[in-house]
Length: 121
Length: 121
Image (cartoon, rainbow over all chains, first blue to last red; front, side):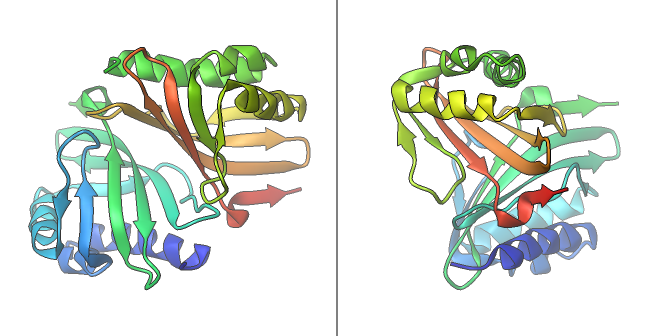
């Protein structure tokens, strides 16, 4: 199991890579057969190719991720964070939970946000 | 599936019941065979009796729960919240994810916090 520090660093690298406009840096945090369920309740996407396309589109949208509170760890293989996706005319409040493999790569991401967590301006 | 509004109201009722020193109000939000994994990585406890004992002890500790950001829903049967557990000489930063059944009761709670999310003063 990766250390708490390593998992939190991966979540921070996810935020930083996203905000730097570097989807490849984000995708490199994921295991080859990882799943992304964003939002929770939609069918997950699986594998680095699909995940790469997902983050390329997300970064291209011009969104920025702003942490709402410090990243949380666990006593297991998961870490979580509450953040806001800031877009030019929209914001989405999200809580991501990431699960990690022994090698420190993300094996699963679940993004909790619903229709009521989207604000338009 | 319960509505987003109902799931968020249940999470708010969880906070309010806890802070009112009313563990019975908290336990009433859970299904009879619900599981609570707090923290994630520890063996879950199962069923209202065990969950009742867990929250009786937690409330008796004098802890108060303070939301760090608005409660999040999803496009499925889950909602999540980031909060801080405030105790006389300690605080713990937590993200809870709750899963709901058709009847609107919580079927599973997973609390994400690790050793590094505890501050003593």
